[in-house]
Length: 117
Length: 114
Figure 1: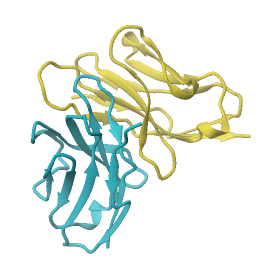
Figure 2: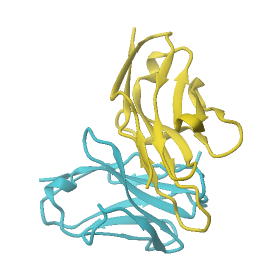
Figure 3: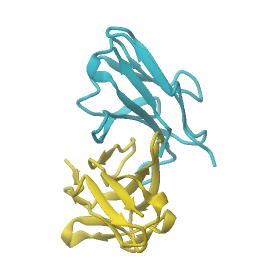
């Protein structure tokens, strides 16, 4: 079984400050890792993903995340926050296994990012 | 850019009634999913669907739930007899392959059971 823990249901940063949203996962094998963003009254939009290769992945809107196997973490960062970054952010994992079928995502509880002017 | 579309955006129903939530996945995608998000809680996996059958389902997806791909474009979630606790936002998603391919989500259907 796999699980995702997002530390902090709410994170508040000033505009222009560093954004750091934490995500730790538990999985019997290294999983696929994702960050999604949800703006009010909208669906989930993919920010970035890690499947294989380089452990530092860059996504849309200036976000990036680093897969650290030793720490079982996949924290999301952005050097300088914008007001438009205010949203709900979800970390998610899916199982890495062979064979066909559709792999469901397991989501964390989400972190509400608040940007202070 | 192709999108996953869901209808209706908001559905109100009475307890015990059947509801069908509709989704049109991205046309060349082969894997389909339903998730739900109860207000203030996390997004929960319900079911995944591939090759005209359910691939995986969660404990939430009990006998009251069913999914169907009635034609080449639609993917539906049916709740046979709704309960108050079924009130949630339901998201449909699709992907072009398994194994790490990102899911593309629709904007959701807000189901309110009264």
